[in-house]
Amino acid sequence: VIMGPNSPTISKRTAKRNRQVDLLLAGISPRSAGALTQIWAGLRPVIMIAPALAVMGLLFILPLLKAIELSISSPAGFTFSWYERFFHSAYLWDLCFTIGISFATAAICALVSIPIAFIMVRDFRGKAVANILILFPLVVPHLIGAYALWLSMARSGPVFGLMNNLGILSTAPDLVSDWRGLLIALVWKHFPITALTITAALANIDRTLIEAAQDLGAGWSTRMREIIFPLLMPGVLSGAILVFVMAAAQFSITLVVYSGSRITTIPLGIYHETFGLKNWEFGSALGIGLTAVTLVILGVFTATIRRVYREALDA
Amino acid sequence: MLSSVPVLAVLVTLGSFVLVPVAILLLYSFSGQWNYPSLVPDRFTTEWYSYLFKYEQGLSSLFLSTHLAILSTFVTATIGVPVGYVLARYRFQGRTLIEMVFLAKNTVPVIVVGVGTASVFVRWGLYDTYAGILLAHVVGALPIMVWNSSAAFQSIDPALEEAARDAGAGFSRVFIEISLPLAKRGILAGCILAFLASMDEFTITFLISGANYTTLPLRLYSTLQQGYIEPASASAMILLLPSVLFLIISMKYLDLSDVSAGVRKGA
Image (cartoon, each protein chain N blue to C red):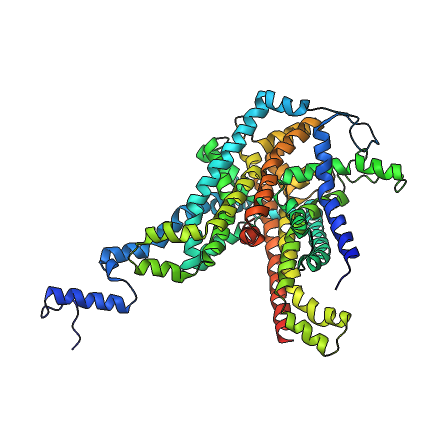
């Protein structure tokens, strides 16, 4: 007969001992045996996350819901007209431009980071300095990085002055308020992300696979093509998608190096509509539209990475 | 084995791409006169820095940004580190949802959140207030702090905490005397990233502050818009100091793994 702690046939002392044994078996030390203490222990993680979750709820989720609500509201009530207007305005081109320049930024960041990663996985003199060079744009405030590049790309600035002196370039291209200038600034700020992820992916490749291929007579290019690149691709793509999302959301860099141009990016358009023209509903529709497009691309891309990764594992 | 010539070529290209713009910024901040096409200014001066420190508005912006960054780092660490611990140690229902909230922050463009924030802040009376700006800075840095401290707690062997618990130490004693000291590098790195995020925060502050509160990045932007290149360069160099200090600290005391979780998942 199994007797519960509340059974009247056993003494209080035995009941207490039984409960302690039960708790010990359940992995809970007898010190925390009281029912209140147990409830407290269960509540502890809730209390630990509650303040942060409240802050996220009030200052991230609520504003996001507010933007969604604004984007579907009009004086007459519910409406989709702001989204219709989005798809029938020049902002559709701006959306294409935003996606295009972010895609180009991600691709260039990934491409320049591959040789960097091959260098950074090895040990060499001055590696600490190289590490700092890579981390530097990441920690420089966005506004300052953008401003420094804006100064450097100015037609009458010292960079083109030097090129002119050396006879490399006779007429300087106008990079300020041009898509090429924006692309350079976005790559400057974001390549550390791909450099870090691709270096980590390369460092994680099992050396014995490469050695085995070498033993089987695979040359340098075969090893690269058949072993290293397939295994590196998930790292390259996940770094690139991170850069894509960040570039598509970029506001401050674009504001400094790209303002005044006719075709603009959606984040600049949102600012122009809300704070410039006081059309908060339309500005919010632009924002929610951009978020939705970014999330869809992110989802498709992540699914592709998973598939590529699984193929790499199967191979 | 790659030869060292291409390695050197890649590193020199990387170095000049990264450093030349900042070098030009530095030169502009000391430039008294700079005529095209000189490589360096024709006359050097420190007047832009003394201008920044003498000019009352510049000084108040510097002061505002500094104590906002300190206070928001403190608040972010106080509420964010416990979340990092819970995510590292507990398995419970709704955990994925909580992770999603902290991950979703960097998939939504900050300007979209900013527009929503400005709109609710007007209604709550937080528009252009210190508390409102502080909250915005906290929410900006919170995911970085959560992911960085979570990674730091995860790297601690749970057996150490269990041993302390078996020896009779209560939860808070184990947390304060065992877990926190062992995770201190990751948490410190998270604090530095949170401080830098506050110094960097422009977009939301730009949307939720009016005439009363002008942080250093906002001051820099307005100086820029007025076309004062040299004074703007000087305040940009001041704003750059914490980042440079961070790099020095990270080179001496931290390594890349201490910051990678926060940078990858929260920045």
